[in-house]
Structure formats: C-alpha cells, structure tokens
Amino acid sequence: QQQVKQSPQSLIVQKGGISIINCAYENTAFDYFPWYQQFPGKGPALLIAIRPDVSEKKEGRFTISFNKSAKQFSLHIMDSQPGDSATYFCAATGRGNEKLTFGTGTRLTIIP
Amino acid sequence: KAGVTQTPRYLIKTRGQQVTLSCSPISGHRSVSWYQQTPGQGLQFLFEYFSETQRNKGNFPGRFSGRQFSNSRSEMNVSTLELGDSALYLCASSFGPGSNTEAFFGQGTRLTVV
Image (cartoon, rainbow over all chains, first blue to last red; front, top):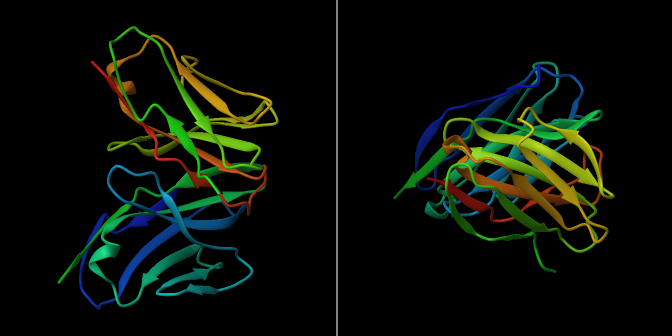
C-alpha cells in the first residue's frame, strides 16, 4: 500500500512538444505529492508539488494534474526543451508516514 | 542561502570496512532524511532525524545507522560493507516533520564497495 507506480519508464519527446508522466498511488493517507528532477551526477531537485485539495497546479511550463478519486497524478511539461532532458521522479508522503515514497523514475529525452 | 551539503562526494571502500557519510542541512532546517539510490531499487528511504531523534526508519539491516547532532548536521554509518551497498546516498533536509514540508536534496555521496 506504500507504493507509487510511475510510467512510462522512458520517454522521448520532440522539442516543443508536451511531455506527460503519470503516477498512481494506493495509500489514501498520502496528502502531499512532489515531483523531482534529477540530472546525472546530481541529487534530485524539487520541481513542483501539489496537495489533494486542488486538481491542478501550474508553475511556468510545468503543470501537475491531480485526480483524487482515481488516486492518480501526472506531470505535464509544455514546450519541452532539450534542457528538460533528465530523470523525473514522482513522490508521495502523508501524515503518520512522513518519509517520501518515490516512483521508479522516468528518463525523459527531448530531441531537436 | 547554502543548499544541503554532503561529504565526501565519492568514496571507494573494501568489503567488510565501515564508512561514515556526513550531511549538513539548509540553515534553519531541523529534519534530515537519508535515502539510498540504486539503478535496481530506485530511491529507498533509510531513516529520518529530527531534533537528534530518529523518527522513522526504512527497511534496511542494522548495519545502517545514523545520528543527528544538536546543530542538525547528520551522519550515517554503514558497517561491514557489502558489494550491494554500492549506491548513491542522498540526504534531504526540511524544516520539520510532517507532510507538506518541502524536502531538498544534496548532491549525494557515491559509495563504491569493491
């Protein structure tokens, strides 16, 4: 019940396109859902996060969509750029279980 | 404002040895968590400290231990190293326990066990 399932494992998107990464969770106690971006040789960097009281959060080209009833959330990267090429991790945490539970990661490659 | 600092960045150790990794959190942050990252298992939670107390522990053997000092700096120790302990060890800091608090990661310590 602690798992967070992430898909796809890898994704290739053309420059200017929309990148979409999906995550699903089972634990209804989760109430905070961050996304992290990781470049090779670096630690994960917090990108954007959402709480279940809203269905969407947008920061620049990055948008999280959240579906509480389906227990799913997704990251959309609009106008994808080569500099967005990285591994993206979704995560979840909640009261009484405050560690971050991570998805398995998505390796995103943006091609010119 | 300085970020999370982890030292050393790289380590090579021999099987059976022990190792200590260090993490200095962001100024003002009192919670430190440790994660192990491997290609096969992804990011796995090790433990979390707040106010020098371990609040949460992941599913790792007792060879993995940690502590936190009064200045919030944290160390983790791995004894009797095994080849499978080779990984990137990441430290994350946040203001305090509880969900909805942003956690920021350091660059990690790359441990190689030979």
